[in-house]
Length: 309
Ligand SMILES: NCc1[nH]cc(CCC(=O)O)c1CC(=O)O
Image (cartoon, rainbow, N blue to C red):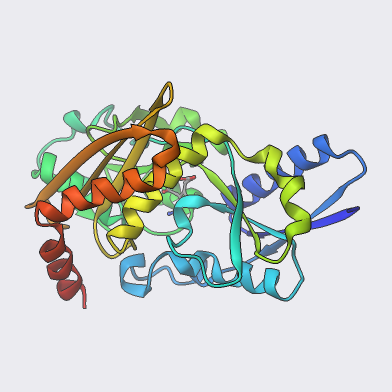
C-alpha cells in the first residue's frame, strides 16, 4: 500500500481527528502517503432541529460510508460516539483508538461549576442525555437547545446566549481549547455517552488488506470499555432519541459498566451497573441493559419515543 485516503467531516474537530490518524499512520509506515477527503454530512447541515428530531447519529457518518463504498476513500475516522450501534451491512470498525478524556465539561464565562449556577441560569445543550441529567440534579436551571460544531457552540456562549454550555472535554482538549473548560463533570454527575472521547476507524468489511495496517492503532483497554458501552446502548435500541448514558472503566482485568436511561425532563432516572472480566465486554453491556429493563426501562423508552413523535 502506497497511498490511503481518509474520509472525514470538515468540522475543525473532525479534521483534527483525521490529521491525527494520518500522522500516526505516516509515522508507522514512512513510505505511505495519506490524503484526507473532507466532506459535509447532513448532520452538519441541519442545524435548526435537535438530532433526536432529525434521525440521530447516522447523519454524521452516511456520506463517509458512501465514499468508502464507492472507493473514493479507504477509511473513515469518526468520533465513535457518533457511530450508530448497528453498522450498515458491509462495513466494520477496524480499530478503536486510545480514549481522550471521556467526561463532559462545563464551559462558562461567568460560573466555575454547575453548583454555582443560580436559579434560572440558561444552560445550552441539545443532548437529551446531558439535559435529563441536568434536569434531575439541578431542576432550577433552564435548558436551551444548542447545536452546531464545537466552535459554533462556543461562539454562541460568547455572544451571551447562555450562562453555560456542556461539551465533551475530549473535543475541547483536541482543539487546544483546554482553557475554556471550567470544570470536568464527574461521571456520577454527568454519565458520558457510550464511546465518548474515543475515535473509531471504519472500513468496508471486504477490505481485509487494511486490517493488519490499522491494528496497531487499536487500543485494547479503550476497545473493551467502548464495546461494553456500545453493547448496552445497542440492547436498549440506542439512538439520540432517548436519554441514555454508558461508561465503563477497567481495573486490572475487571471491567465495570454503569448505565442510565431517563426521561428528558429528569423526572425518572434509572441507573444500573455490573462488573465482568474484560473478555465479556459485550455480555456485560447486555447484563446492565437487562438490569435497566428489569427496572422499567422498556416502558420508559416507549413513552419517550411516543412523546418525541
Ligand atoms: N455529538 C457531537 C460530538 N461528537 C463527538 C464529540 C466530542 C468528541 C468525542 O466525544 O470523541 C462531539 C461534541 C460534543 O459532544 O461536545
